[in-house]
Length: 113
Length: 112
Image (cartoon, rainbow over all chains, first blue to last red; front, side, top):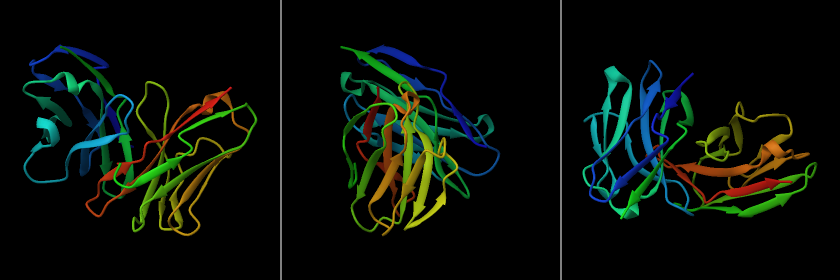
């Protein structure tokens, strides 16, 4: 069975700080990896995804993530955060033949102006 | 999100009541998913449809939960004899041809 771990439950940063949110998954086969964001009062939105190819993927709003297969990781990064990045961030995985998304427990990001 | 509406947006039920939650995707999406998101947790898979066929219901927590999609479009998640532990946000998602899942706004169910 696949699973996802997000070790940072709540991260607090000042504006312009750099961000890295950890995501590790457990599954030995081919995976598809996703980061979703949920802004206060809004629905889940897709930030970025990795299926294959270049392990460094870029998403919306300046976010990027790097797939490191040897570490089973897919960490989310942003060089300089803004107050509007305050949200809950979820890492998720699907695998070949397994259509459902398996989510981590999420990381709450609070940006202080 | 991306053409998925859910109703009602909020539902308060007394323990023991039956509830029905509706997901209405913009037409043409073959794959439809239901997830349950408890407070402070990530969404958890409930069930999956491909057109009208329910291909995976392994995530339904008990036989009180039932989902259907009779014409391959609108889907309904029904919970019978609701319990307090059923309180959560119920999310519907459709999968695009690009293999991305887009989520609706969810229904927040509170069982008193």
